[in-house]
Length: 349
Image (cartoon, rainbow, N blue to C red; front, side, top):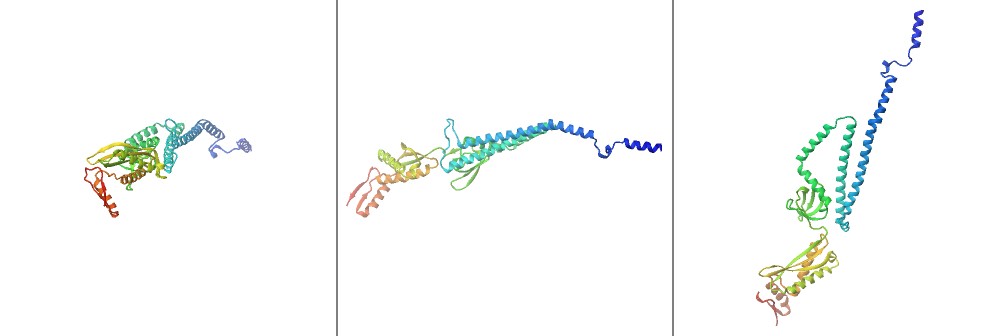
């Protein structure tokens, strides 16, 4: 009986809660884990949150700055603050859009990589990991890539400076020799290569790093130049007047004349040979229009010289024969004179 009473008292005095062996954790252990998590959250967790928040804000701020920089490149301004690029024509618009897209893409990618790398390293350091091996590995990889991709890095750097300095753009006619040895119209501008289509229709992919010099024939303004070689004994004052008249006729054209900028210039004797004297007619034009203006000038020069009866160099006899052939059906005979006589004589039957 005593034994039964003692067993009953022991059962009543036992803890009604489950034994530690059944659950594995006691209330004290749970409290300790909760306190440890709270300390981690208030310490390391807050630091991680701050790092991620600052990284996101920094990336957002950089993107805002990049947007303003690309907009500044699109607008374009020189040292005096005046407009650098003309706001007319589809070529100028395409050029500004191309530069904005390329520069903006490069800057955004660079900002994302730099900020992301810094945030990643800071997170690892906050978690207690040793980031020295990562930094050393990045340095070794950087050196290896630098040695193995020197030409690629050169192409990228050349492309960045080309875009920032506005050396050329879509629609420009450029000469990228002697390294590349290509002359043509720019169709696309990238950081590594530039696409140029020549006069034969061939599309050239020119690495930016190979361009030791670039000649832009369609930026800002251009000049149409026509050289005329007239007969050695021609009256040069009369020839100058006729060239000026031809330029005035082109300037009066309702279409081509709008591309001329300023008055034409007839320079002095550029060259002298045994049978010809060369004079030069030049006029400033809008960019990329110098070739059309030059063609119209040649047509006008030919007409005024033919009407005035002034032969080109070495063509005096041919001009006299042509005049005789044209005049003979009307009963008028034009007799060609020897080469040493400055003008032709006309005899009427």
